[in-house]
Length: 120
Image 1 (cartoon, rainbow, N blue to C red):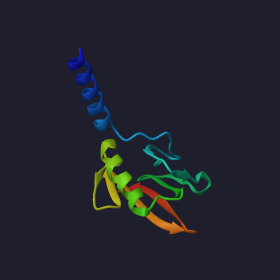
Image 2 (image 1 turned 180 degrees about the horizontal axis):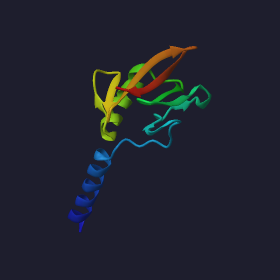
Image 3 (image 1 turned 90 degrees about the horizontal axis):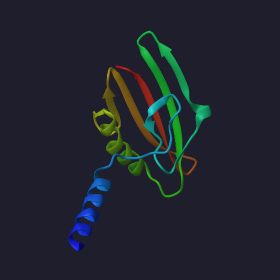
């Protein structure tokens, strides 16, 4: 019985460690790009429009105290490949004819992130 309980616990831990990155909300206009926990989306700064070549979206969020630009970029480096995005450096990803640029920057003493989606 103890052996079975140990195996069940081990299996549960392995499942948790291999689970995809979870997020409770997604960026406005980027319905498959998660807002990193600890970031607050600024929907009034979102720019969304369609062009003959594809959609163009810009979204922005601000970090709570304690998050750095490195934390933000690391989160998206781990999360985006799970969603089909291929990295091209630390701040650019491509998928299905679209390019996603991620810029982490300081704004008013806090870190912020700007995501820009455009056709390739």
